[in-house]
Amino acid sequence: MIVTVTLNTAVDKLYLVDKLADYTVMRVNRVSNTAGGKGLNVSKVAAIAGEPVTATGFVGGFNGRYVESMLKEQGVETRLTHIAAETRSCINIREESTGRHTEFLEPGAAVTPEELERFWEDFCAASEGAKVVTISGSVPKGTPPDFYGRLIRYAKERGIRVLLDTSGQLLRDGAAARPTLIKPNTDEIEQLLGAPAKSEEELIAAAEKLRDGGIEIVVISLGKDGTLIACRDGVFRGVTPDIPVVNTVGCGDSMVAGFAVGLSRGYSLPETIRFAMAVSTANALTMETGYFKTEDLESLLGQVSVHKIK
Image 1 (tube, rainbow, N blue to C red):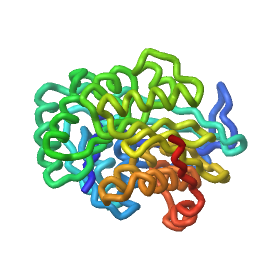
Image 2: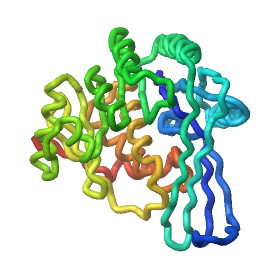
Image 3: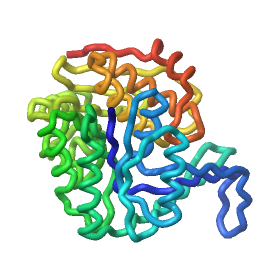
Image 4: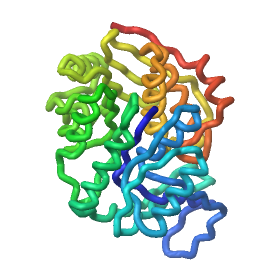
C-alpha cells in the first residue's frame, strides 16, 4: 500500500481558451476540475495503475469536500484532515491555438497547531501497513520547517520507504532526514550541494554524492534528454520515445507515482525506472493532470530504454 502526503491540496481548474488576450472578456471553451496538489496527482496515478493508495493532507470547507468526492470517484482512499479554512483553488489557462498555458496558484490557507496535531494522528494511522510513503509539494503557513523531516524519520523507523518531491528549504531539510528517493531538478541539485552541476559528468557526480550520503535513489530529470538515476545498482539513464505531447503538467508527479508503485511491488530498480518513465510519458499524452490511459502505458513500456552508464 502507498500513502501520499499533500499538505497544500487544491481544486485545480483547467480553462481551455482559443487564445489568451489582455483587457477583454474571455469565453472558455471547456472547463476541467480535478483534485489538485502534487501528492494528490501521485495518488490518482497510483490508483489508476492498480495499487492501493491512501491520500493524507489538509482539506477544508466546500472545496475540501469537493476534493474528497473527486478522489473517491477515482478509487483513492482518503484519510484527509479537515481544517477550518477553505481549500484553495488553482487555475491553469491553456491556449488551444498555441498549447501555451498560464497558471494562477492561490496560496494555501494557514493551519493551526491543533490541526497539525490532528494531521499527525491521521498520518500515523494511515501509515499502518504501508510499504511506501510519498511526500510532495509545498506546505501551508503554520507548518514547522522540519515537518517533512519528522514524517520521513517516522516512516523510516517503521521500515517504510519514503519518496520526497519538493523544493527549496523543504527539500534541503527533508534530504537531511535521508528519504529513500528524491527527485531534484538541475537547479535544485546545485542548491543542495552548493556546487555547479551543469554537465552530465557534474550531474552524475552530484547524484552519486547524495546517494553515498544516504539517499538510496536520486532521480534527476533532464527534460527531453531523459532522466539520470543514481542508485545502489549504479547510475542509469532512462530515455523515452518522441510523442505528441498534449500536457506536461503532472508528469513529474506521475513519475513519482511510478517509482512508488514499482517499489511497493518489489520491481527491480531498472524495472521501476522503466515503469516510472512510461507512466510519466503516458500522462503527457492526456489533457487531464494526474491521469493516463492503460493502453498508452502498455505501449510505452516497450519503448522506454534504460541503460546502465556507470
